[in-house]
Image 1 (spheres, rainbow, N blue to C red):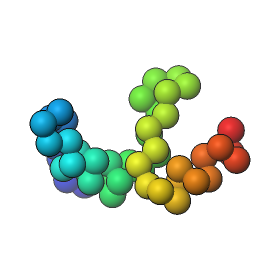
Image 2: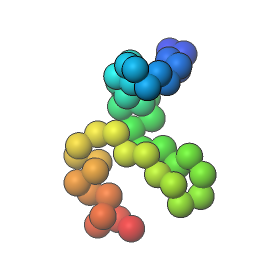
Image 3: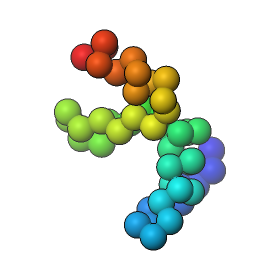
Image 4: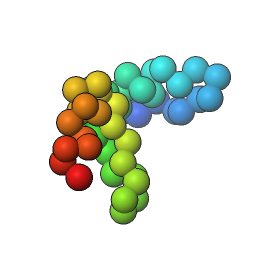
Length: 48
C-alpha cells in the first residue's frame, strides 16, 4: 500500500484519490464515517 498523502486544503485531491483506492469507507472515530466512492455513498443510508 502506498503512503498516505498529506491532506492539503489547497489541493485535497491526492488525498481523496488515495482514500478512494485504499480506504473507501473509513470510521475516523466511533460514529464518524468517511465514505469516498459514489456507489458506497448510495448504499450507506440503507446499511445504517
